Image (cartoon, rainbow, N blue to C red; front, side, top):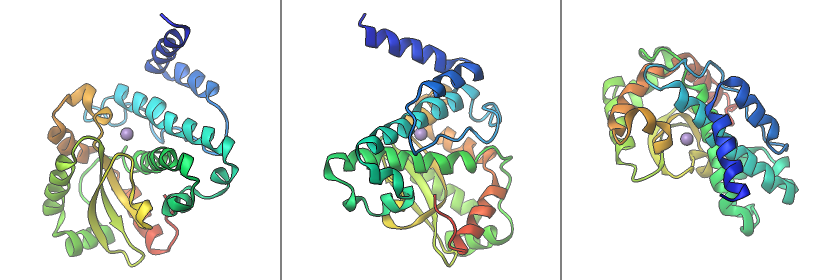
Length: 239
Ligand code: MN
């Protein structure tokens, strides 16, 4: 076994462990302008629909890797760390060609997951108030919207995301993206989205993505989505 492989295995073992081990993994990460915020709730908050181990690996390894990779890029290309991420992603053609794909993948991954943790940790139920009215108006009502969202997420081939975008007037639309692409790359804003990469559900659901998509609604935090909706209408939603 090579030294590198052995190191990866040891790091993996640490990351699979409890919170203290996760903290040690963070401490080893290269520093830089991009930060991995802690999960805004305990890793088991979304049980039984999304298991704690999936949350820990997803946040502490997958999302952490996107942040670490971005910081590595920022060390070579200083302007990457000095521009707000949503602005970088809206103008990828301005990013040096040598790192453009890496910025697209890791920057998109950082933005998508930052949004994703925020809008989970809730108790599901149903949208209310302005968001409910917007879903009724633009997406055919909550039941039809859930059905269409799950179907769209199910149709993503391989890895990607299903999003609801919101414009400055509060209008909603359903979109899917491959890989770590994000509506931010079209100058749009994501109100909410679900990650349909296998890493988001495979430990508990294996290949049963439709079951994951259906169960995910039980952990959606509509209060957070209300806040994002209000911020979007005020022109203050960035990521
Ligand atoms: Mn993910």
